[in-house]
Image (cartoon, rainbow, N blue to C red):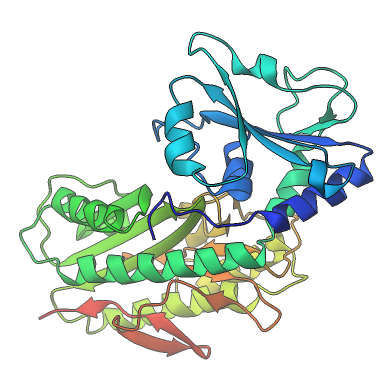
Length: 371
């Protein structure tokens, strides 16, 4: 599926916005936050990926009347409008409002007491601040978004596994990173975060950006990929010598991860899940303070980490939320994308070709050993 092949309907999102508008006696919603643009449109809102700045806004009007009167308008500039029409919104029921590239497009955005917006600054004192309200809606995926994310994660795991399995000693970390970026982009997946660390760098640096260092004995590749607005996350490791005694250390890390996974259930509070996972380090032979050396993950779905779990993260988990736990220690790391369901966490980044270990009734990724 290419990045321009968007979901055919946003009816579930519109239904949520109708309820939100009715609850606040509003008739219009203005979306400017990139995460909300991903949630509503599935489109690529960026031009340079280095900026958290969108190249268009969305105005949904007529929410207080009959559905036939509802309208979705894309507000953008003259540079981006042709591309957005031809790729991101091809055959979608939208209208365009376009300003010159020297102009401020915000002048075309409606304001007032009947307008809900996710970026109230500069939107007029009478507009309704809906940042938190929209975040709460966005964090529970619609059925269509769950399907889209499942497809993305399956491809992300398969491609990452294939590239990692092909690594050989002597290749540079940068070469490995380039191979993965190219393989993902071939299937319409943008790389929004990528770490490649080898040998001593895995334990020394929790965010090992790729360098020219040649791979010698062990490699960790961690990747966050985005397609159709959704983000999946995965980590895989390969070793060119037998793990031997270190296999027990990696298995202990999987048991730490199990504490995070087993407690990621609807109704659980994220800070409590974090506390149980953090405590599992000491319970499994690691330094009890190991969790302080790197964050342990948190809420994902439209961003590599939208909300990082901590002792103060008082978010209650619901069915349809997405998590990425990433415990690490002693030169190892494990990470997958997980959907919260009534039947327990469902791991989405599954690759049948990758070797697994059974931990807590779940197949978890092993370190691939190539001798």
